Image (cartoon, rainbow, N blue to C red):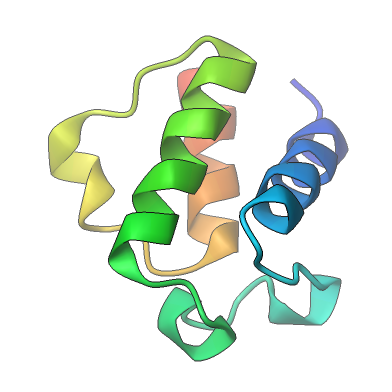
Length: 78
């Protein structure tokens, strides 16, 4: 799976959830860019659905940036 495809999908989903997704923010902590825990879970659920994957529960608490989420999706979508 192409990383750019994941980034574009994430941008669309985040925007729909009221989060401004900017490339410069990809490595910033989610809390710093206004993603609270409920919004974060909503984005993750939408991404799971978009890519037909399941992110294991133990991985959910390790996701601190959008880049970490993207890398995890790349790994799971192999």
